[in-house]
Length: 99
Image 1 (cartoon, rainbow, N blue to C red):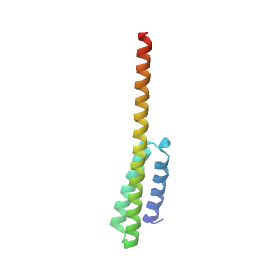
Image 2 (image 1 turned 180 degrees about the vertical axis):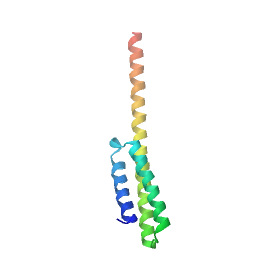
Image 3 (image 1 turned 120 degrees about the horizontal axis):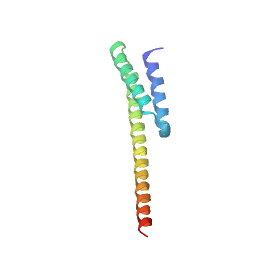
Image 4 (image 1 turned 135 degrees about the vertical axis):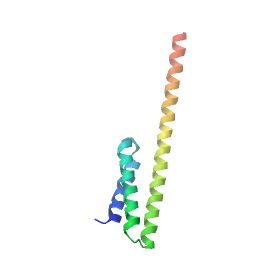
């Protein structure tokens, strides 16, 4: 399999993982991103890319970045809601004990 096809498959895998924030595993994600960096380095080192291939690669990279940012935002919002809930429970418990 060519490096470009390996990279396409890896990008599809990453997009699928980013689309389901509940199932994100930081260790696996780190490994996949390291593999993507390795494949990109090899691709740039070994293959001559056509302008169309470069554009496609840049678009996929941009889409991955946008999806990762969207997922990060979702997770940050969930964390904020969880912390808000914990504070609410804590305040309720404090008031309850004062009565």
